[in-house]
Image 1 (cartoon, rainbow, N blue to C red):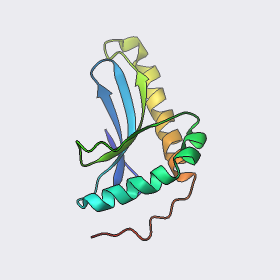
Image 2 (cartoon, rainbow, N blue to C red):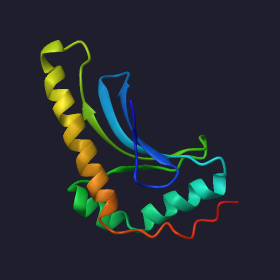
Image 3 (tube, rainbow, N blue to C red):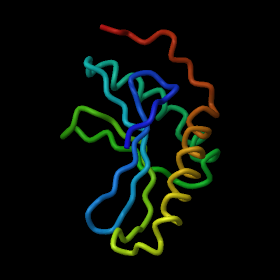
Length: 116
């Protein structure tokens, strides 16, 4: 599931991973790799403030093996446990809101991005 993001070149996503985990993430990807790096870099500069606002550590994926950058949080979740699906949905909704609010907390200036 992808959701609009107020941040440039990004969207929020919810991913059900093999191995029994859910991921809520901000997915950052521009057609220009330099812009992707610039957007991600501005978040990284505010990492401590963002994680403090979120209330726990986040995963910051800047792996060279993929062109996108991801800021994510994970939750154990067994897809076969139908009785827990409502709990998972509640976690997803609360986590999306917390992540959005935490990423907005430092008021990062995105006005001068080099759009290539």
